[in-house]
Image 1 (cartoon, rainbow, N blue to C red):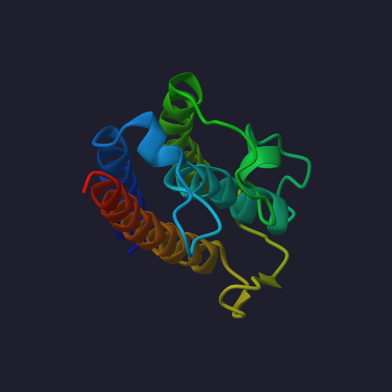
Image 2 (cartoon, rainbow, N blue to C red):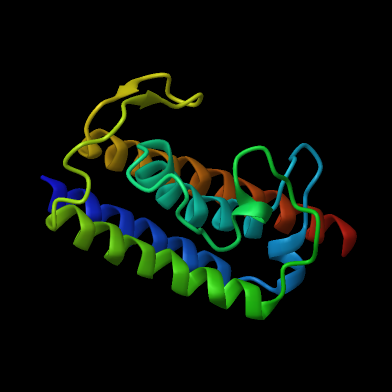
Length: 162
């Protein structure tokens, strides 16, 4: 079952990257009316959230360094232009962190975790499998936001060209 979870996380991230690759830097950085963030922020947020949940929140490695967490962690919002170099670094990190988490899972790193509940789902996560499942749900939630933002950005753009 866990193999399937990791594959679904990877696939969600692949289609998220495809969404980003199909847009201009302006489009991924635009915050359309009615939204509080942009596509780039939503992508960065999933990239930093999964290792945050798996390592920090479980207290497996509370002090684990997570690149970009200051810009995309819980409670942040887009505060700078997210350029190509940063997007490319996030794309690499998106896939590499899942490989590392899967390897650590197979090596028993998460055999004992400190249970916690997220504010989003409010379910007690007392196994790493529950944490990984919540991470998949969280990734898909933000992919959905990004898809809605893309539609809003494209509609705004077409209104400007009328």
